[in-house]
Length: 325
Image 1 (cartoon, rainbow, N blue to C red):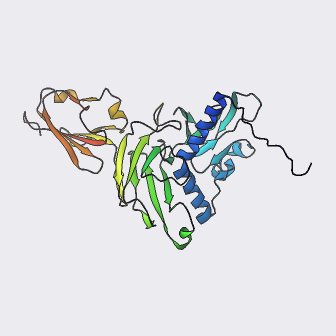
Image 2: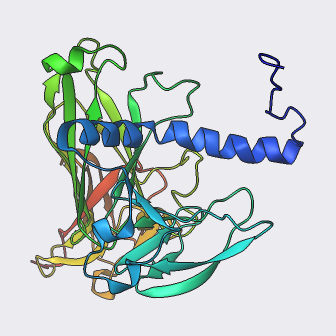
Image 3: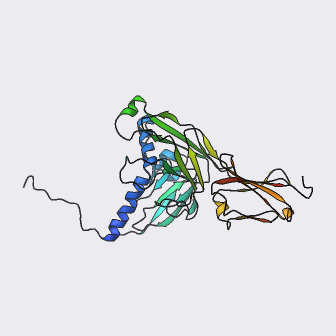
């Protein structure tokens, strides 16, 4: 009879189904800085967030007839699984370099691979050179936070602009919004967060950017990265983070460049070249703004980094004895 329709939603989901839905729900809210910025690109620049592959890979003839993969913004390659009970699927990776969003594994483009697809993980990949801003776990779309996890996918240069406004209303139509341009230079590995453009009521006076250089099992999935590689405080003026560089006075030029994530993975220590054995060394540590945070004197051939702040980016070494210039 008219007006006596049945409710079609299910309230008998299993615990596993609920857990899988929650994974994707949390991911959606963590990606809100990225999604909100895409929405502004659509409003301001007539951008298309959900993109056929031919939009971004026009010189790759293989993508022309692929209808079951798409780009979501400039970063994500989304590969839905639509076959009943399928737990894997064939995926063509367009030209370039790609990271598995869930585990950080690296894939060169121009190939077709069969990828596992458990119910908890839609096949999702990120293009090298991408900058993906992620917020904390929040409960609703307009919940504000002054901390952003900035995931960097090495392998190419990249850029992205974060858009912010009051989160409600139409004041953006009268220019009350802000944009934060971000650039990544792959060689040398450097993140530049540019001057903020614009303002709006209630805008954060200070933000914290937790920079994460994605690699295997680091900066992956929807969970917050517990140990970012670099932390930058941002007050609206440009800040940047040069790669870790160990500068020696024996030859006056950098002899080893280490990405910020590496300095914590080498047993939290650094071993000097053999020509430094037994010499008195002045070791200075600087953060990414160039401010010296610690200085030590040592004759040891190994310096322990456990006591040094984790946002160190430059370690400068001068030999001050034994007539070494």
